[in-house]
Image (cartoon, rainbow, N blue to C red):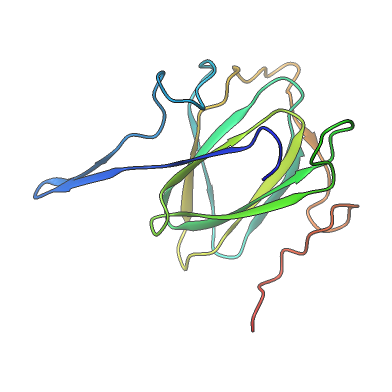
Length: 151
């Protein structure tokens, strides 16, 4: 596991009315502080990658569909520099992925319908100076191929 990455298994509580799933609590080990909560989506087969933050940590949970969330540690001085982590998150595996600042990340929708991600980063989004540093999803030095792995 990439240094600083944490995975929290989410508990789904169903009853005859529907279901409840807590995503992030202030008493969770992964909780640091609250910046904001937002939703982002991807259509089937779409890759949204790669980016990192220099200030904020992300806390991502997929609440509809399935996503392949991939992390790459390119941080200088990190004990896990060069490591790639791949997570399959969503309805069939409800987890929260804590992504520390400096770790490159992205995701690909694996379901046959639009997938929804909820992110609770530690910082507010700054419209004037976004904490977003991007590289091309396919043309880069990251040792990862977004293609489906058949076998």
